[in-house]
Image (cartoon, rainbow, N blue to C red):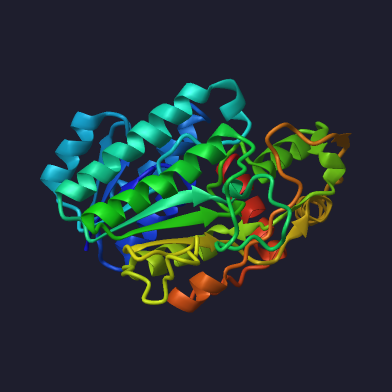
Length: 334
């Protein structure tokens, strides 16, 4: 298939592009290579993709409507995976306009382009952050997500609502994936594993928020990408069991779905740090701090819906995933 992957120089996007190319798809990568984190890492990810047959690349932003329309007109993607976004909970407290530009205006451009170009299926990144102030665990797609605690989360909730409108009005099949904490080789420098590894190797203290007591559903990148591919290949239709008198927030009478994509194995942050210390052969100096604004204490994904509909089955324990990351990190920064 011809597949457009936005955010193709990003962590998940670049890994997904490799996977799609390996199975014979033609991939157009789309990314603005912004400096939210070190562009050199994005360049390095992209450099591994550019020589591969079947891969082409356009540097542009989601909010650049003319560039978006040109890509759809010329490449004519059959399916689209929208992973480009302004990411990060904490940064949304400092620079809210970046989130509106990319995650709202940019996503509108994606939806309009898909609508007018006969795209068979749009898969897009949502986030576990949409669960916000919820405390019922595990988080399930049937739960309410009406109480976000960051603007980032609010934009992701908005994406799900916008996609539903297009699915309903224009019969555009859309699937939103609520990513839980993704980690692994080629990961993001603003994420805990990357930050901790760099500081521990440099002999610097690490900031451990909520005194390390909170839990996260850490999910290895290969498991995530496998789930994205399975979702991309499973085009949603109307849910025959949808009841408008008792609506299910995870499905619809339109060709629209949202799924959790996680590991369903929450790990306490202190345990995650222990595993990292074992892999590095060093002990971290921990600076224990209170929870940060916008954070939630715990996350855990109920992935039964994704398993049922696509056969998704995450299998990588954190001991394996963290070791793979440390090996990559030492090789990349040697």
